[in-house]
Length: 212
Ligand SMILES: CC(C)(COP(=O)(O)OP(=O)(O)OC[C@H]1O[C@@H](n2cnc3c(N)ncnc32)[C@H](O)[C@@H]1OP(=O)(O)O)[C@@H](O)C(=O)NCCC(=O)NCCS
Image (tube, rainbow, N blue to C red):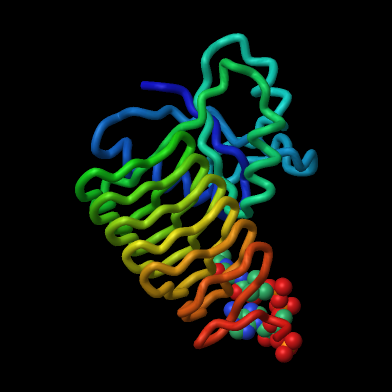
């Protein structure tokens, strides 16, 4: 069994407890040591049975190899955290729920998390530190670049390409071959039928720039 911390103790972090429990039911792999959280007010508290041990200094001081599951959905915050943890002993855990249908020739990068009930079909490329919440559909030839996040029940279509730090809200649908630009946000429930420009937010059906 390997020791693992969960970074941080918010909603996504607490959902990672469920994911780790599901993995452990299949094969006892992970021993949760506690939460890491940079919010000092959380230190010492116990949440869903798991103690908040302290901030990133715990990881940066570790003299032994430690695994960490990144329990954060906001792309920019994920990137900041990763860059703030400089200790080579820290290994970012790649976690895939045993309930995920993971088809053929799919790649899942370091530190990425795929939650319960997702489907990844064929030739899917998921980069590093990508978070995929419950029940997402990721079909053939989709590319999802580093630090991106999909909230629950997102449906992508073939050849869609999500660039670095893109965020797709719950229940959004993305049509085939669509490119979602870097740092773009797709609102919950949006139906995306045109490429989304980098750094913009789109909402609605059909999805349009929020302030358009
Ligand atoms: C799109 C989003 C990022 C905008 O967030 P925000 O900048 O805080 O926007 P606000 O809540 O201030 O809303 C601004 C306007 O956009 C509208 N709007 C916000 N989200 C919308 C959405 N998903 N679809 C349609 N309209 C939306 C609001 O009604 C408001 O309209 P108004 O100006 O006419 O009153 C956010 O609403 C969203 O959908 N996030 C994804 C949430 C999600 O999936 N969470 C899962 C976590 S468990």
